[in-house]
Length: 231
Image 1 (cartoon, rainbow, N blue to C red):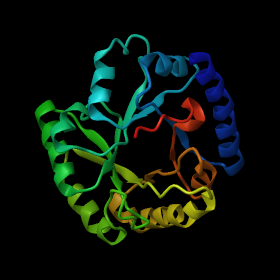
Image 2 (image 1 turned 180 degrees about the horizontal axis):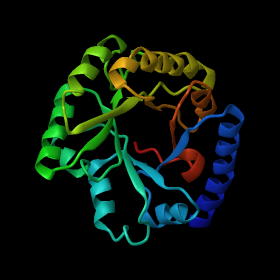
Image 3 (image 1 turned 120 degrees about the horizontal axis):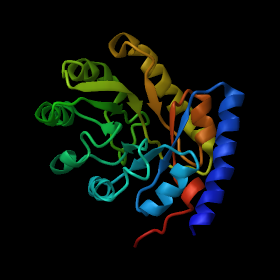
Image 4 (image 1 turned 90 degrees about the horizontal axis):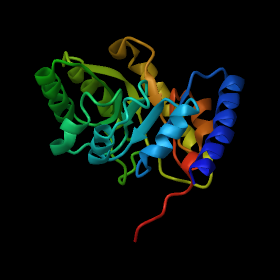
């Protein structure tokens, strides 16, 4: 199984890098490793993959408790799942980037924990750019005011924006939403003060996301295969 994952990764990683080069894109591949064993993560790390995304705070905690640091000293965890207030303690300080902050309250809780631990935490603001009632994130029109509030939290480093769109068999259906997220980032350039990270796109529409300016693309099935669905 591990060899199969390695071969999938090698094939897709080349495809991903080649496309980025063709588009002059700085995008990085974030390997979505939720539910996957550390052995597979270490195998991919040894093949050159350094950033991994986890959806569940407790799973991330458990993986951090295992003897990973010696095997993969430069591995960077990103948290891409829904933030539960009672589990924030598991992701603050253990992740290079939290993608899914969607309220001032959550940002303030993260900041408070950072104060206790005397650290800073990098985050992204999750935008529900498609106004999908089934997706988390704030409305586009609320982004500017929330960014200004979050920027007052000294322990928070707001790095950019993230979105998740509805799955479709047609990747082109995601294009207007990814484009709109990029345009929103441009509108917020005075508040963000730097070239922001844009976390958008997954296995089925990564090319469209790269076209529209993604800097982080979340890839799961193209590397690890389709996940088993639970009833």
